[in-house]
Every structure is written in C-alpha cells, then in structure tokens.
Amino acid sequence: QVQLVESGGGLVQAGGSLRLSCSASISIFGFDTMAWSRQRTLEQRELVADIKNGGGTNYADSVKGRFTISRDNAKNMVYLEMNNLKTEDTAVYYCGAFDRGIGSWGRGTQVTVFS
Image (tube, rainbow, N blue to C red; front, side):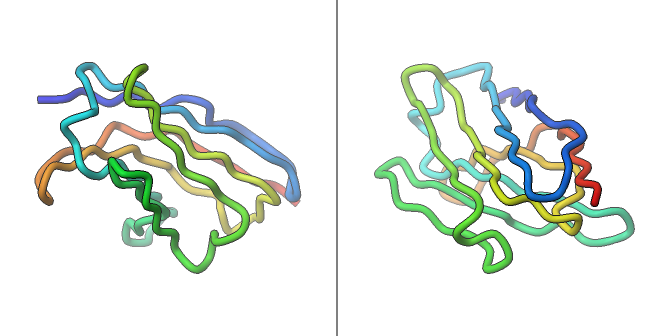
C-alpha cells in the first residue's frame, strides 16, 4: 500500500501563496488519479483538485483559477500550488492516490490563512 506524506503547509496571510507537496513511497505511475482534498474544522472533507495520468485536471469551483495541481511521475510527487489564498481556505489538506477508484489518503498538512 502506498504511503503518502504531505508537506508545505503553514501560516499565511490572505492573498498569499503556498505550495503543498506530496511524496509517495512507491511509483505513482500506476495510479490513474492523484488528488488533493481538504477538511475544515467541523466540516466534511471536500475534493479540491485531481489530476489524471494523462494530465487532465478537475477543480472545485471554490479554487478554480487560484489553485493548480500537478504530478511528477518520475519523482513520485504531487503538488498543489495555491495562490490568492483566502481565510476560507484554512483546512487540513490531504493527498490521495487512486487506481480505478481504490486508494488511500495521507495524514494531511495544516494550512491556516489569516486576514
């Protein structure tokens, strides 16, 4: 089973940027979908973005135009570039790896945006 470790979270002022990274313990080439989700305190987890092996991407409406997901199969890494951050982006962000809908999530990294 793949182990996923997120990093890059932290404290940032509204309007600022962060880049989250996700390191996988095995090759991610076999995972058709890599994804980022987030969970705000006392709320359900929501899918933020995903990326297919062919490069196709999907984004939640709330982050379109501000977040960019990318994957580097050679390095077994997935990234989430987050720009123009808002206080409502404050959450724990999780990286996920999926093959035909089956997979797992990492343990998350905290992102806190203050005004």
